[in-house]
Amino acid sequence: MGAFLLATAWLALFDGTLEQFLPASPSWVVEDGTLAARPHGRNSEYLVTRSAWRAFELEFEYKLDKGANSGVKYLVQHYDRSGRNEVLYGVEFQLIDEAHKDAGPPENRTGALYNLLAPVQSPALPAGEWNRARLVVRGAAFEHWINGVRVLEGDLDSPEMRAIVLSRWGKGRPGTVKALLERKRTECPVAFQNHGDAPVWFRAIRLRPL
Image 1 (cartoon, rainbow, N blue to C red):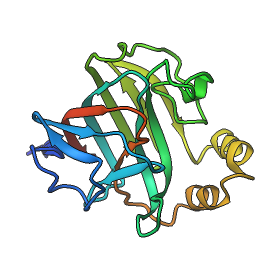
Image 2: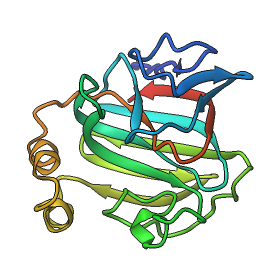
Image 3: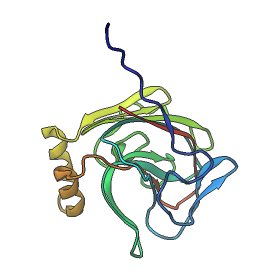
Image 4: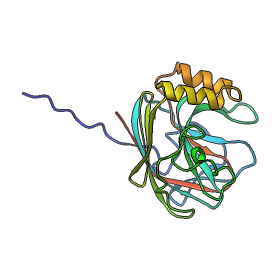
């Protein structure tokens, strides 16, 4: 008899509670059945999953308020919230309102691998509307999807990507560069980012190991 491969079940990362995540700052709350990131006065604050994966598919819906800046961090190598500001080393699936001051460069816009690779298309709906996003990670390979459109793909271990990381972050973020290029951690958590500029909402968050 032939072997049958069973599809891995989806895991609901948000079921109306924060049980799937590490303890986080008060800027992360459950609001009207959504996961809400409220404005705050510090640097980025993160909501980090308790579990970690090497390969996975993540789907979620998000809505940005005017002037909001957020994202999803993956290939996370380090996280520390013991100091005044939270520190996290990883790469980011960027989510940002086009009116935000940091959204000018193409590699900083929604769908980008933040500050590294620009999306090839911009299918995101404007502030105040719900969007669907999908992130696929297989080791160092990644795909970013917005509203059913693949807007970016790449491999962090490719010579081209390693050169981009070194060129962009080699001087200003040596800790991040070392962590990402060495990647001693192969199974990594996923982190939702709250820059604190304006509210952001997430819902229908689910993940399937690959």
